[in-house]
Amino acid sequence: MKMQNKAKKPHVLIFPFPGQGHINPMLQFAKRLHSKGVKATMVPTVFLSKSSFFDSSASIDLCTISDGFDEGGFEQADTPDAYLSTLWNVGPKSLAALIKKLGHTAHPVDALVYDTMLPWALDVAKQFGISSAAFFTQSCAVNSVYYHVYKGHLQLPLRGSHVSLPAMPPLHVSELPSFVAIYGVYRAWLDVLVDQFSNINEADWVFFNHFYELEPEVVDWMSKFWNVMTVGPTIPSMYLDKTLENDKDYGMNMFKPNAPACMSWLSGKPKDSVVLSHESVGCFLTHCGFNSTVEALSLGVPMLALPQWTDQCTNAKYIEAVWRIGIRARPDEKGIVRKETIIRCIMELLMEVGKKGEEIKKNSIKWKYLAKKAVDEGGKSDKNVDEFIAKLI
Image (cartoon, rainbow, N blue to C red; front, side, top):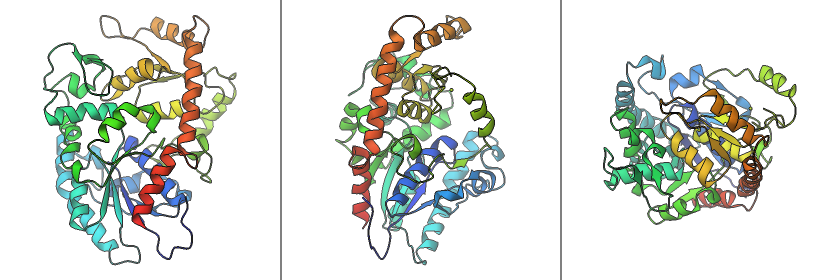
């Protein structure tokens, strides 16, 4: 759906947590809104706006707020605790000032889509009486774990070796997010992730950056509490429906990529033999960050899972046992994944030994089709975005 002949476009602020893995999916969502006739404005921090590489062809406006570290961002702070406490103190005032300023222009803000790791943004939206949508950049399963910690249903430190939660497969403690599995490590980040739910009941919408078929049981369970909508996959259109002109990259990079050199190397390799959208890619050795996982899944690329921390072990569980699109390379008794293990897993994925790789490849093709279908016109995610826009008109 694209709005026709409307005198005033609805104006939506997109406010991500200042990290690459949060900016990417939310910027892609902003592009989707823009393609449907919405005025979409990204809100990075002052430092990121000065230090990041932003693709101006995306037709997305930028308005900045301060995180209290305008000259150096996260690196300017001594510790995560120092950065987060300053952001929590400075950010709400800066965001409120921006919304107030835009209120005196021809395009006042109609809705705020905020990263759930910044729950205070919802309180700011309420101050101005504008609609709000919470945007999760991790999976429903991972966030369900944090929700149960928030509610006290999952007591920390954990007791026992397994956890059973509604609408999810049984999980070994090692398959839970590391902040939960290893209690006390990076406590500041655990607090942020648990506090995502502190005021979420007041949000008008709750968005997830993947598609319904990926986690239908958990989405349905969460929909009992909130107005949940899947709006992804939030990856460049050229990898999916190809309806967004020039949408060939994520559009904002905190580090300067060397794409020509990478593409040149890939082009010299046989088909299905290597890294993701290039035809040479046969499998993807991944740390299992959720953006990387969704991108590989959407491109039909089998994965060799090598999770490290945060949500990655839970994503690896779903990659291997639920979506069945990859193999997890498991560590030995010393906690080290040996090169022999990685070689064996690659051989399986490339179908050079055994039959597991053949099944994984078939499943990967299935998920690629479902990902594209979700964002195609009339797909579940496309309809959800249209429904959101219709409420703003």
